[in-house]
Image: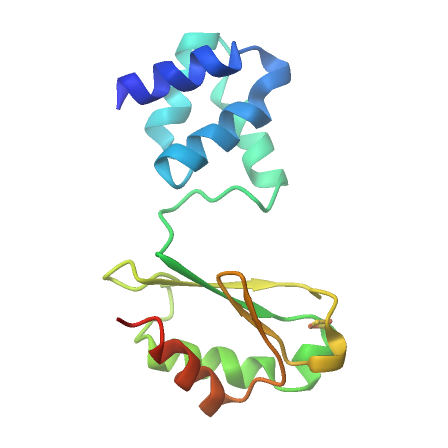
Length: 151
Ligand code: FES
């Protein structure tokens, strides 16, 4: 762990201008913004953790919890909402057996995320599974699509 963090530090030559780069590297190497890593960089750079978390919470690209191998992103923009996104989310949660307070499956195979309009309203409701875009998604269609990722 320390070797990974030292490598990130060396690469970024840490200063306050590089907080975003440091966080991107942490997420790239560790998978998410781990508290331990933030504390390590805070001590190493004398930048308070609050500065790191200010950036983490501002940019949606950063994640503070481990994410699953597959990211299921449901568009919750207005058009997708009207066209059935809430029903799709309910079905995904049921199919992946996600509890109310869970967005990642216990086996770390899936993480469910929501975004605003992804710019494909003509095929709403839209779901992305990793990089794959699915349009006109129905609850039954999403269950079939998820099967392909269950190994
Ligand atoms: S609202 Fe979902 S793609 Fe635009």
